Structure formats: structure tokens, C-alpha cells
Amino acid sequence: MEEEIKKFSFKKYFIVFLIVGLVVIASITVIIISDQSLLSENDQKTLSSLEKIDDHPLYVMTYYGDYGFEQYLESGMNVHAQNIDKNRDWACTCFAVLNNVSDMLFGRNFDWTYSPKLLLFTDSPHGYASVTMVDMGMLGFSNDEQVSQMSIESQRNLLTSPYYTLDGMNEFGLTVACMAVPQADNPIDPNKTTLNSCSIMRLALDYAKTIEEVINLWENYNVYFPPGPPLHYLIADPEGNSAVIEWVGGEMQVLKNDNTWQVSTNFVIYGSNEQERALCSRYTIAQDVLSNNNGELSQTEAMNLLEDVSQTNPSYSTQWSAVYNMNTGKFNIVMGRKYEDLTHNFTFSLRN
Image 1 (cartoon, rainbow, N blue to C red):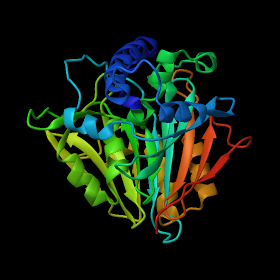
Image 2: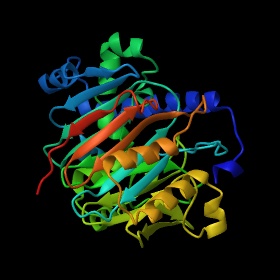
Image 3: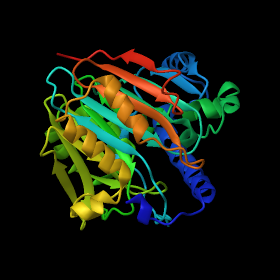
């Protein structure tokens, strides 16, 4: 579908996204650290855990203690009108591989502009433990030097990272990722709390074990996309269930998997026909590979598929590729398309 979308000035879009994003960060920071002039012991421990493990760069950080999400769920965010230029060649690709009982996988390419990235481990006292990927550009860090020379204010921005989830897996193997789409028709219900488009994924990871639990949770909240683009989401669990969630016709539409795999890229799937889906080459490639393998790939084969659909466009190249094993907790990350040179291997502890 991206072949039908007109290009626009990505630099202008990203500046708007960054400025308004920093305003959102400021409001969340108030919830987390209130008016304290000094960082708490847990805040200091969190920031001290920050470690650079890849020259892309990729950082790893463990968040200690409470990040204020329960308070955020009560208050939500203030919404205001935003004009978003939706004419962009978005290029993220996600898929769920669900036919191997012991190795159900979730593959994800995040295609965006360059900035430092963060692999974040959280274990909220009020929710489930999870591991997530965060684009540090959304936190105000556009290059590695800004990370290494952080001011106190920048450190506080970094403490908002749980709210900027882009993909991840929780301790029950539930995995979620977002992808941009040209439009989402999601009216704001004044009787519901409004969450931003990244923190709605945090809600799923912190409080849901299954697809059904995510659906039940999300039905109780509004999702607000500005200043970023409209999104849809692919979610999967280790029971072999997956779903794409979109907002069409003013309602949340849930498209559950009808095969032992599911693919999602950057067009609205609900109501689309076969001819429209074929316009997205990444969607077609992933569908063909998963169909030919009857929804069963190894983690290496899943990463190979992500390489096949990765992007080299200077303005939105593939920033990372991740394969999450929802049964074992093992996951692999490749930064900046370095598929042959450097794969980071991790194991996240899952509950039985």
C-alpha cells in the first residue's frame, strides 16, 4: 500500500513530532517525579543501569520501582487538535508465527529516522514485567553525544521511557507492536480516559496475559495518535492467538488470525481486498513465506524474513529488527540492518 502514498517532508514532520512529544514528556514527568528537585534512589539506580551495547547506538536500561502508570491511567492526557500529514511511505513490518507449540514467534521491523534506541526492562509493582524497545529520539535524544552528556532535565526525560513503548513482550509472552497507517477513525469518548498511542501498548504489557484481555482493556480507553501518525497494532500470545487492532468507522476493529500466522504492515487491513493487499510488497513477501512454511519458522528464519523486507531509504530505514519467542522468552535484535555482523541475543524470564 505504501506505493500509493505520496511522500512529504519527513524532516518537518519529525520536528513537529519531537516538539509536541517533549511537551507530553513534561506532563508525564510531573506524574513520575512531581516537584522533587532531586532524583529518588530508584531513579538514580535506573539511570545508573543505562549501558551502551551497540554503536548504532543501542542502550539497555532497567527501570527500578514505580513509573506512575496507575496515576496516568486515572488522569490520562489532555487532547487537542493536531494536523498530521499522513502522506508518507511508512514501512514497518510485523508478523506472528504461530504453528510451533514450543516456539511461537513475533517478528518486527521498526522503520523510522535515525536516533539512539533503548532496550528497556521494567517490572512495575502494579503490573507485569516486560521488555520493550524505545526510540530515544522521542525522548529528546537525537544523537549519541546527547545521551553521554545528559543534563538532569534530560535524565528526567529518560525516566518517561516506559510510556514510549514501540514493541515488546511481557512475562506471560504477550507481545505487541505498532505500525503507522494512513488513517484511523477513533473518536474521543468524553466518558473514557485518553491514552497516547504508545502508552496504550504499555497498558497491554502491564496488565494483560492474552489477546482477549488486551481487547477488554482497550475497549475502556480512548487512544490519541497526535503528534505521531495514526497507528494500528499487531498483538500475539503464546497460546497461538494473534490480532490486528484498528479503528475504522469510529469503532475499534479486531481482526483475529484465521491461519497459523498473521502479517501486518502499513495499510488498513479491515475491509481491504486481496488486490489492495497485494499493493504492499512487504505484506506479500511475508504472507508468501509464512504460507509456504505453514506458519512455522525458526528464529533465524524469522530474522531472515525481516531482512528480506527491511528498508534502506535514507529518511526511514530499518532501525531495528526484533524476533521475540513467546514460549521461551528468547529474543534477538539487529540494529541498523547489520544482519550478518551483529545480532544481540537475550533471554527474558517468562512465567509458566
